[in-house]
Length: 357
Image (cartoon, rainbow, N blue to C red; front, side, top):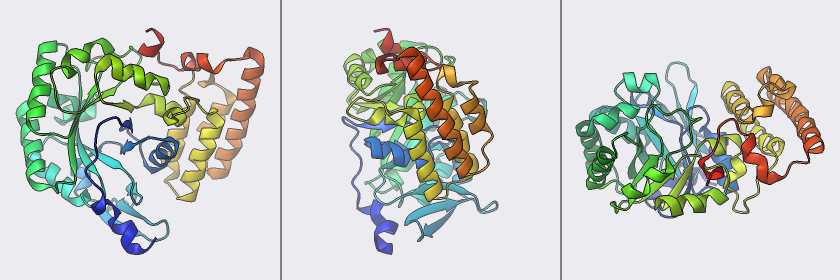
């Protein structure tokens, strides 16, 4: 690739269609480039970056990385890598914001290197809500309106502008909010089928979605409890959403995007993740965090010696060694239980609404 191509590949890409897409969800500290790269290899159509806050983004320094032919955004003080994107990567950047001017500044900094901007309106975590961002925006439609209108007016038309929300406990209020968002000419609306107070361990409220999407024309994306590729078709049918976004299902086994509907063995997926992380020199602490999250999605592995080994890794070689322990553990598990792949998702720490249908 010549310099120009990897530097400017996104500017020639069209605004993403949100119809019939399978999407990697934005996940804090998980959705960095190794996970996004692997998701695309397995068949994801669009990948979302982990949510980053506008305050932080406006200070980023953009660096062209010739060694890996990618574009890096660096923290000016710590010089830490904050966001990396590769040529032609269909990446949507999720932003945490509660201020139109600041959000536009952040978007302007990124606009040549992303496919779209997604406003986080669903994160229930304290740091988000306390700052007036995330789920706090569900109750501030006028702030959202200001942000979206400002982006739509000022960003290049090839950039998509979308929102990701949660359900409000009042169904009428949810529909009203969705209609208001649609009127702002957003490109897509992602609905996480949970209330703000719901924990991930409570099954997604999938039955609440169709009454909303039936009243909307904007492309809708469903999010909640998709752990297998075959859940995607069921999710579309039940919700009327044209696309599906996968969060924990991808975190625990990113081969969930494989159209053959066969989940790869966890050690295989982990080895691929470690390979990408090491090859492109991801921040070790970030990859380690993601790896531990990937392994602890399975109940029986939470306190296993293989997991403990991953928790203690200090370099890439340690990661490969810990993965060998995982391989042995998976083999032993297979031999003792003669597990069918079909019962696999019941091993996850959180239940799925699709296993109860």
